[in-house]
Image 1: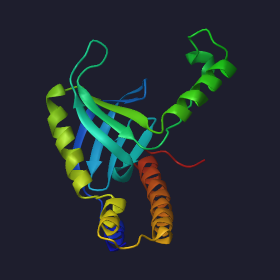
Image 2: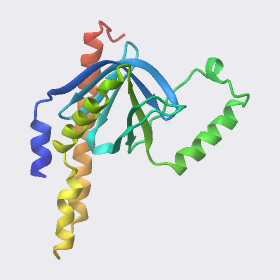
Image 3: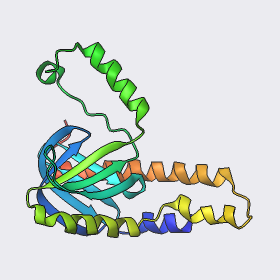
Image 4: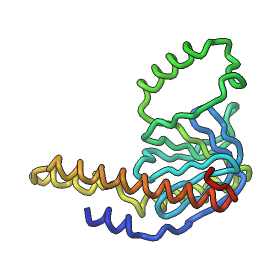
Length: 194
């Protein structure tokens, strides 16, 4: 609990920043944008979109070598399902109706409990730098569950109530941070709330 409070009070600082990084969520490319890795989050944005990924929800990070289908990139598994909203009139190119697509997407979501992310820099020589920065950010944000797991192995009882309180505090804090980040993003880009 004490570590989590320290992290919440910690000022956000940029560890690494790179322009011209393509973000692919599952199989959908969101185009090129800015990748900003801070001591608290991995962020990506372009002129129309903003995403912020908590280190607590990044379950796997790896460097993928180039294949026929994908250039070299950083591959991450994000432990939440990200819903992308598309204009089905313009993007429905597979010949299926919208209801068929929705049913198939629901089945896929039930099968996987994470979202695949790929960060593809235009300058592929930067891949190792991106990976190192994400690893540094993860080290600065240890998983709170891991710290309490030792109690089980040393015969000390675990309290479910403590875990529930921590999860609720983390969710409330993440919601507040997301609102602040989105507000700052809109201000930086000259967007006004209408």
